[in-house]
Image (cartoon, rainbow, N blue to C red):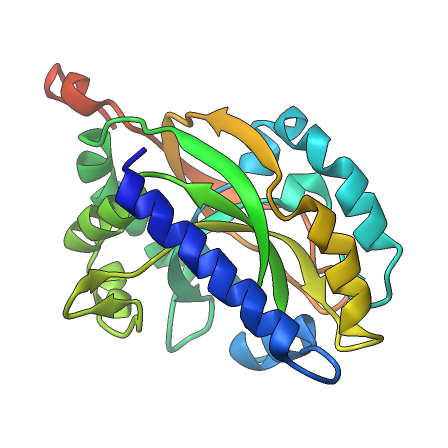
Length: 249
């Protein structure tokens, strides 16, 4: 893990937490806002790391907190199988954005570049709240998802187009920070109850895992079922130096 990147991530968690604590009144309603962001519940296609599917037992130490949050009207808690990190939001399935017939080209074009990446460890821990909307778990990845974003953008024209509009891409580089959402605020109740529930767990450290594949998924989010099973449509191995040893799909 690159120390300066880890420090940057920690500083952002602290800023997010301070911002959440400093606000007054009710929180945002995450899923109410999602209806607008998703153009009326259109389904997104994203590059994601579905960690809750890949290693559900890894999150067992988090269960007491998830149970406590689940008792609050202020928070909606997804199932463990939903826990994931989104590192590229490609777009939504709608006529002027993404057609299903295009999806295969995204991962076919990304695969040769992803194959050349080395698998990298994810150090998972630290809890904060972003944008007064979502409770998240931190990921220290040494900046490797930023590199994944870069190479996928080089290989996939649709991603390149989307990344040009990404406010995280600045003249100083990519400011993307990976996170895992573990709760969504509802706009109900009292934010102090959320603060009290989270405070004892803010420095939780779950440990390290090293996925060997990057994945793309259809996220079938609907108004009546926010957490339907993540539909993984592509699993692309990272071979690193071994990518030069023969042909890979």
